[in-house]
Length: 365
Image (cartoon, rainbow, N blue to C red):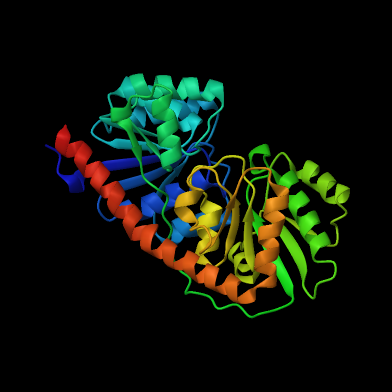
């Protein structure tokens, strides 16, 4: 039997950009490195963000940035895995799940753990993930219960499906925000169709109309990057929101924006467990979000925020107005969000769940 302290863990990630999978890869490596020999492998080694590189360096994490063409990278991984058959490989997204499943199987790696992060997956990806899960991978970890249920309902082997929620290193103290008339609303997320920025901007347009005769006024900041950038700019013009909306592309210091915000707003059509909502909760922000993925586990309805149906711009604008008009409620909701995060999604809880998962794998083999 392999002693737990001799276990080698590889965390295979597409990039080290600012996405949820990348952040969780770094967090997982940080929390496993003192117990197991842990290495992050970045398949697209040229794609990284300073914020995550700083985290890697600060925590002295072992990391490999793959270079060259696909063949060169695949040969490198094949040789690495072949030399470490008694290891465990974690992957989070389809590309790395394929590499994990195929190369891990060819080289005889003991445990190959795939990851699926959204509750809803496009048909082709779902079919491919199902093949990988049922025939090649040791197990698949979802970061949300709704996604895990969807996989099982679509024929994934239920005995190999697990759920471990995302975690967060809580660095901030609870925040008491000043009451003010200029209310800053914030959204953070990739510029992709799933985030439904059209509905977000429509809700802000409606909210602005509702506040026309009020003492309050709003600003709305959208932070991210992606293929829908030009569409978002056109929608800002369409709703005549140039003076209200700021579009920020992938800033180095995201925390400053959470710190300055008063309300966090999410209009996703589907989610897994939202990293951006988790980060907003760390900064004591009340949340208005769509009731998708595991948002119901993050947001306590009527206590830390509001959950609404997708595309319900009118309902969203009404809930946003309620928070804009009630500074005491904003602060109270934000404090409740922070406490709920600390009690249920802390780094320590995340760490222990993964350690238990890994130890159970090796104890049962």
